[in-house]
Image 1 (cartoon, one colour):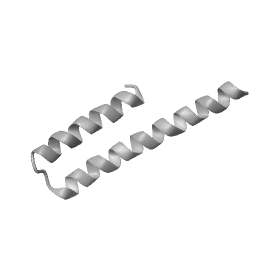
Image 2 (cartoon, rainbow, N blue to C red):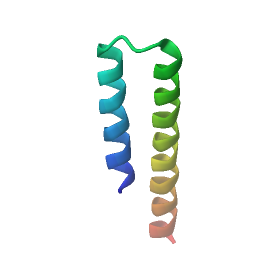
Image 3 (cartoon, rainbow, N blue to C red):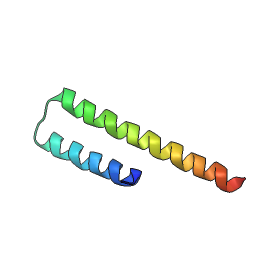
Length: 54
C-alpha cells in the first residue's frame, strides 16, 4: 500500500471515529498513527528530492 493511501485511510478512520464520538484516547492513537504516516511521507519525498538533485 502506498503511503498516500495509508494517510487517506487513517484520515477516513479518524473522521469516522470522531463522528461516532469515540473516546479521546482512541482518537489520539489514530491521530498519532496518521502523524507517523505523514512523517514517513515527508521523509520519503525529501529523500526522493535529494536523489534527483544528485
